[in-house]
Structures are given as C-alpha cells and as structure tokens.
Image 1 (cartoon, protein in one colour):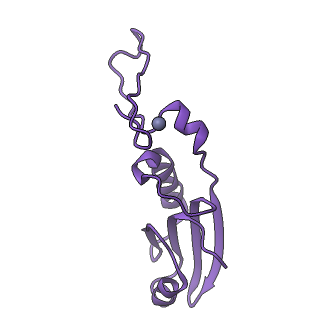
Image 2 (spheres, rainbow, N blue to C red):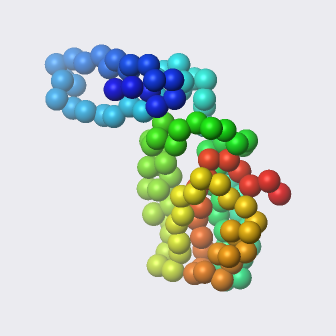
Length: 120
Ligand SMILES: [Zn+2]
C-alpha cells in the first residue's frame, strides 16, 4: 500500500497470527504524526432543527480525503447511531453560509462533515 499523502510505500509487519487478516492503512506513520486530525464541532440552529458541522481540521488544506478514511468511517458510524429518521447526513469538501441557507428548510437535523471548519 502507498500513503495517500506522501506516496511512500507502507510496510506492515505480519506475524503468523495476523498473516490472513487485512486492515487497510491510508497514511504512513510519518504523515499520521505530521497531519494529525483535530475534530471540531459547530452547532448552528436552523428552521426545524440544528446543523451539526463536524470538521477534521481547523484550517483549510489540500490533503487527500482518502488519507483520512478511518476518521470518516468512524464519524459516519457515530452519526448513524445518533441520527433519527428525518435527519440528513452530508460529507462535503467545503461549507459556506450560502449552502446552509439552501439546506435551512430541508429535513430536521443535518449532520455535515467537512475537511475544514466554517468561519463564523
Ligand atoms: Zn505518508
């Protein structure tokens, strides 16, 4: 496997116990230390509920989303546990107030994951 950020080959040490198990790795150890995720949550009221804005980083960056597949899948699992029938879940590259205005009348609560947080 190759790291989605730096492109280096990722070597995984295997033993006889882990020989037939496979866990995909998307970032090398160096990139995991260098580009640590700082989950951030913002809650904004809307017409019939709340916007829950989650972001992996505080500031915008050009890192590949695929390098953070573990964090994204964990987020989806957590949101699926707490979301209700009329809630919506979005995974977006960027978020702005124009999009929030469009989504204001949609459904009840809306959960949105983006790479960087919304500047308020
Ligand atoms: Zn790397």
